[in-house]
Image 1 (tube, rainbow, N blue to C red):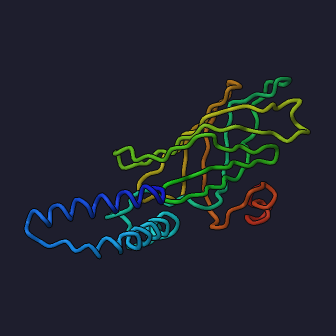
Image 2 (cartoon, rainbow, N blue to C red):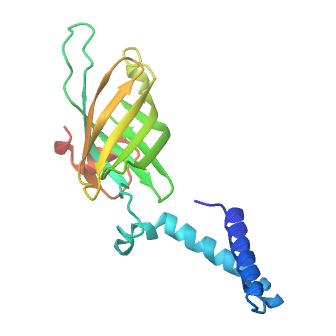
Length: 211
């Protein structure tokens, strides 16, 4: 989203170009018109803020003006990892988790929460692949709880989700970590409210749903 200064510069440049074209075509440009430019720029900036935060979600704008998917909320997630227990060499069971997605038109952030750790994004990008799908890619840092760091250290990873256009009920993708582990992830059953911890999300979804 453009800053206030960028918005003002854009409005003034637009008016300047319009004024030059008007003079070229013999239209009189009155000096008092310039006095309302700051008001016009403020109004435009306010509209941009409202659009970035709320208006872009309106159904009226869907498809003809806004195509990007609306992902904001807290999602129930399940991770299937190739990690094996170092002692038994047995594969681990699927991991239940929750993903919080905060989103405006111009920004998106992710937070993945399990019973043992939280992953917060370092970089993220939501992009139209021009194939009928969107891709959501991120690099993240995973921070396990202190009591489990003897077997699960802080690490970094990458995540790639595929979002079919117009189908935002179930998201699926893959992840990789610098601990040489990888796996698949699936998001479903979204709640509109944003939860920042595993326990609060677990309570909101119902313990039996994520146990």
